[in-house]
Image 1 (cartoon, each protein chain N blue to C red):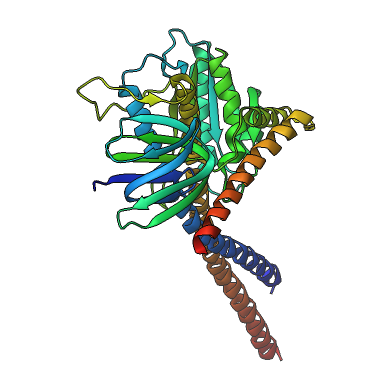
Image 2: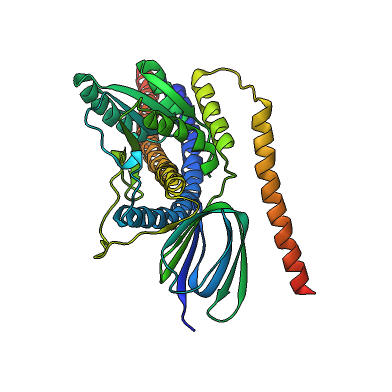
Length: 139
Length: 287
């Protein structure tokens, strides 16, 4: 069975780099499974787990809070986010930075809190799901 | 024995200062190691995302992102400047600010206006005094900065670029060369020209999911963020090594000063003893 090279990196550290047989990840449009010689593809990832089968048939699980998946026939790259992202959330951060620049007092409106809670919830749910899978496996 | 006591006091106060500078030197040295490790850890992401953006640029794509399109006339530019939060790190910030001032003057001569985003409190203070248009500011990121903290400030600049408020975006940062030397530099961020080193002979394109626009938007924002983040992490390493070197030379200067003062003190002491002796001898001769 052929193999491909996989790199999982986040802005703050390198998470995984090695040769793998296949992987599955939670893409924006649904779960995707990638095998070697896949046609080039690029898609954002949802918060969730990445399941990797290494060349030694070991199964590895990584949790990421979103990111980008790039697929080339021989090389797959996962650019993982370290921060919880979301359009509203980024907007809020921008507003904060601006406020700091204006040296005004920050007042957070409700919808920002809601967006943040939603993003955190998605992340927590994904984390929970992974813990469950891990538990099932150990049984 | 006039002056002896003063000199002694001076010596002890310099010794106290030396203790402080030595402690700071050692703290900076240990922090520097960690900062360098962090810098190395951030490198794979920067490399990977550069590769991916390079692939994107060489792939045949129907959608040209505004970040990739060069504008004909430049009326206003954005400048992100990365500085330290604390001082006592030699000429690190000063050298960078000098470089920035030169560039800003250049722009002013071409009647190009400048919007500044200051990262680090030194830059903030500097630009407040300078009376430029400060649009975003973030400071006190600590020794282990997180990308989370700078997303907002970068977004302001990127939004300004997308909206056409600024036509070019620059990043002023210190490059870490080695422990002894850091080099200030200003690099061009937007519009970006990804490397096209690995050019593919045939036309090909990605499968974009859900669509090319959102994917590319997403990726390019992350690309710029990663460049800025890399700059910030590098700046921490620069700060620590600059501080270590500065504090080392301060400690060395202090020991030189102490040696000199010790010599003066000894001379003064000897002179006063000689004087006393000659007074006694002269007194005995007179009797």
